[in-house]
Length: 131
Image 1 (tube, one colour):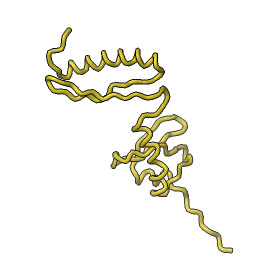
Image 2 (cartoon, helix red, strand yellow):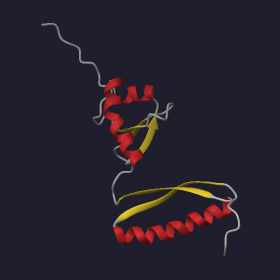
Image 3 (cartoon, helix red, strand yellow):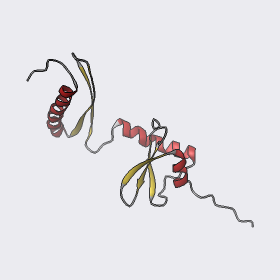
């Protein structure tokens, strides 16, 4: 089958075929290759692709992980386990729910707002007893 023009269906089929070829190559090299966004016109298609070491973190995940300690300190949040939850990420582009936390007992990740994160992860203030 030859491609005469690019449309959604053609790009979907192209993505599936490319992923099969990339998976075979990636297995030989010990890496992970993923076909990302595709933008197209009837005559051309632009394809994003990500390559990473197996088990490694992509660029986006590294940015999220590196932003957490600084942002948590700024908002006065604890990175320790609090009530069975632990902060694991911060996505600066998600303005409504930028914090990502892990529910320890289930292993599920959840997004939460800044205000909700403060309720979950702000350490209680210890009052000083008069001497």
